[in-house]
Image (cartoon, rainbow, N blue to C red; front, side, top):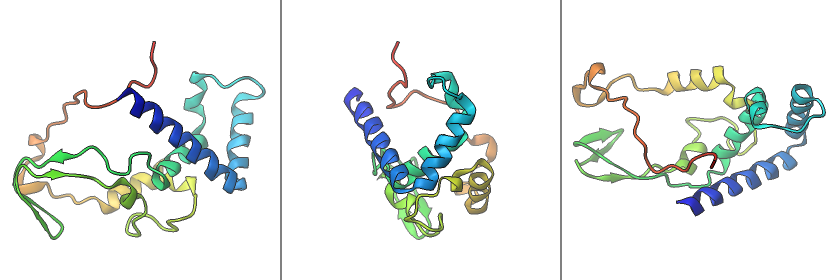
Length: 159
């Protein structure tokens, strides 16, 4: 898992820099933000939270170039229907991040690098617009398990 964590990070950084080089206006906007926020000082970890456009550019990079196109699989707990597909209980389901990021129902101007599409207000509005408000198989809201568990993740920073 450690090797996968290193590879996905370097792949994402390479893709982000390539997209910014192909899109000089986006690169200039990122540079202006950094100069405004930091002046001439070196970027520190604590500065990242102030670089909003940089975060938008990273999200847009992940939409266009997910380092792991097929996400970790999940297993259905019970029989369910997803759109027109019947999924039996105990079925392993994979999520295709590449297809989601390039689906015309979710994004306009699919092939173009547009970090602004991920501004918080727009992203939240799109989430609300497309969200199906019905829980599966008559589940009640209080039945949702929001417990966070440690899964297959790599720590962001080793100390």
